[in-house]
Length: 312
Image (cartoon, rainbow, N blue to C red; front, side, top):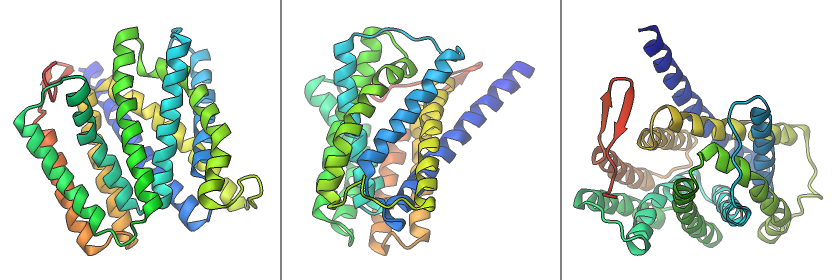
C-alpha cells in the first residue's frame, strides 16, 4: 500500500513539474523576446541545449542513467535535424503571438499523421481522421483571423511543423531500431544540436532581426531572464523523460493539452488573443479532445496501458 502511494506521489510530482516548467518557459521566453527586446531566439536555444547537456552529464556521473554508444552518423544527422527543429519553434514563438504559436504546436499532430500515412503506410481510424479535421479547421480559421499574422512568422511556423514532424518520427524509429531510451538519445545528440544552433544562431538571428547578438547591450534583467530560461529548459527536458517513464506517451499528450490551455489562458489574460481567434482556438482544442477520446486509457494494477491511435 505504501509502495503504491509512493508511486502515485511520484507520478503527481512528475506531472506537476512538467506542466509548471513547460508553461514557465513559454512565458519566460515570450517576456524575454517581446517585452525585453531580446530577439535572438536561435542563439538562446543553443544555450538551452548546452545547459541541458551539462546537466545530463552531471546526472550520468551521479548514475541517474546509463550511457549507451550510438552510431555517430545517426546521432549527428539526428542532432542537426532536431537542432533546426527547435530553432524554428523558438523563432515561431518570437515572431508570432502566443495563440498562433500554440496553433503551430497543435498542427504538428495532424501533419505527423499525414507523413506517417504517406511514407510509412500507417492506417488511421475514421474517428481519428474526423478529429484531426476539426483540429485543422480551428487552426486554419485561427490563422486567417490572426490580426498579428505576418509573413516571416508564418514561414517559420511552417518550417517548424515540417522539421518537428520528421524529427518526432525519427525519434521513435531510432529508439526502436537501436534500443535506446529517450534520455540516452538526448544525451548523445544534445552536443550536436547545441553546436549547430551555436554556430548558425548568431548569423540567422542577425538576418531575421538586423541585430547582432554580440553587440547587444545585456542589462542585468535580460541576463537574469536568460539564466532563468536556461534553467527552466533543463527541467522541461528532465520532466518530459520523467512523465513518459512513469506513465505513457498518451498521458504525456493529455498533459500537453493542459499546458496548451494554460498558456492560451495566460495569453488571453494579457489580451494577446483576439475575440475571433479565441473561438477558433476552442474549435482546435475540441478536435484535440476528440483525438484523446479516441485513444482511451486503461489501468491494470500499478501499470498503465494505452491503446495506440493506429494499428501497427
